[in-house]
Image (cartoon, rainbow, N blue to C red; front, side):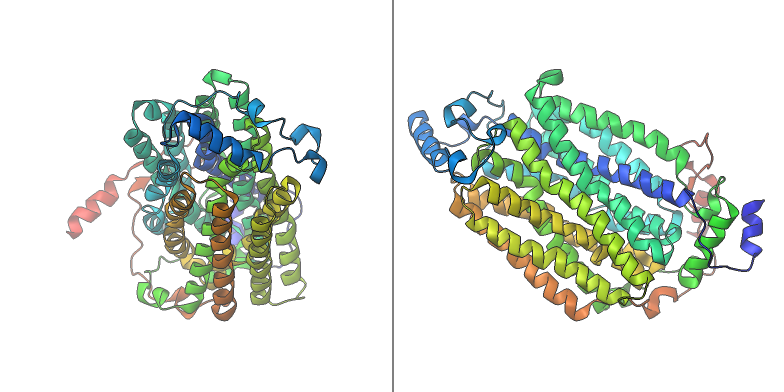
Length: 532
C-alpha cells in the first residue's frame, strides 16, 4: 500500500536517512562479484601448485636444473640489499624447491590457454545477458549465472584430472555463466541507483571484484599450503560452496526494481523514482542498434574498457606465476603478495569513487570531467607504475610496490568508464555493458595467451619487461581516446523507438521471501506461438 501511494506523491528531493533496500542490493552485489571473481581467478593461484615445474620445460633434467637455478639466483639473496623483511625473504632456491611439485605437465603456452579458456565462454553471453536483463530485470540472470559457475567450479578438479580438454570445457561453461553478471548488474544500477549515488553504488558493487580476487589469492594459498582436502582441489570446493550459499540469500533479499520490492519504505521508493525521473522509461524500448554502434561516446567507453581488461587480466592471470618464477616466493608468500594489489584496488575504488561522487554532488566538477579525471588516474597512473615495475628487476620491495600501485589505481576506473554506460543511456545500460564487456573480455583469453607465448620456456626479467610494456602502452592509448571522445550526457537515442506492447517474460518470476526459481511462462510461450 505504501509503495502504491508513493507513486502518486509529489516528488521531493529529500534523501531518506539510514539503511535502505538499495544499500542491501549494493552489498549483496558486492558479495556476488566477490564470488564471481574468486571463481574466475582461483585457477590462477591453484595452477601454481597444479603444474609440475620440473617437467614443464622439454630439456634434460640436468640442464633444466642448472638453467632454472642460475636464473633464480639472479633474484636471490636480496634481503640485505633492499631491506626485505625476514617473513618475506627468500631462504634459498634449494629450500623453495622443496615445495611439492604439481601433477600436471603443462608448459606456459598450455597454461595460458587453460587460464584464458574461461573467457571464451564469458564473451558469448555478454550481449544476450544484457538484452535479457534489460527486458526482464537483472536479478535472475546474475543469480543463476553465478549458480551455474559455482556448480562447475566444484567439478573443476574432476575435469582437470580427467583430461585437459574437459578442464577447458568446464572453464568455458563457467565463463558462460558469469558472462551475464556485469550486464545484469548495470540493469540493476539503472533502476536502483539515484544519479548522485550512482558512482558510489557501482563502486560498492564492483569493489567486490578486487576484494574477491584478493580473498581468493589468500584463501587459496592457505588451503594449498596446509593441504586442506588434498590441497589445490579445495580451492574450487570452498569457493563454489560459498557461492551457493550466497545465491540463497540473493533470491530472498534482492529484487529487479524498487517498485517490486515488498519491504521498501515509501520515502526511499519516492527518493529513487524522483531522482531517476524520466531517464529510465517505464515502457519497454526497442534497442537502437545502429545509433548505438555509431555513437563515439560508446566507442570511448569500449576502448577504455578494453584497455582496462588487457592490463588487469594480464596481471590477474600471470601475477602469481611471476611471483613464483621471478621473485621466487613460496605458495603462501605468493598468495599474500599476489593479493596485496587487489586489496589496495578495493580500498582505492571506495575512496576515489566517494571523492568523485562528492565532486559531482557539490558541483566542484562536471560529471564528464570527473569521469576523465578518474580515467587519467586509473590508466595513466597504472601505465607509469608498470613501466617502473619493468625496470625494478630483482628488487622485491620496489616491484611489489609498483605492481600494487598499478593495480590499485585501476580502482578509479569504477568512477570513470565503469559507470559511464549509465550516464549516456540508463535505458540501455545493460546492453551497452554487454557490448563493451563482450569486446573487452576477448583480452581475457588473448592477454594471457600472448604473455604465455612471450615467456614460454624463458621466464626471464627481460621477457616480463615486454609484457609490462605492452600493458602500459595499451593503457596510454585507451586513455587518449577516452579523453577525446567520452561524454556524460544522456544520448538522444536513449528514449527513442517505443515498443507498442510490452513483451512478456519467458519466465514466471516469483518475488518474496519464499520465492521459487524462475519457471517457464506458458502465457508468453503461447503468445510467441500465436505470433509465428
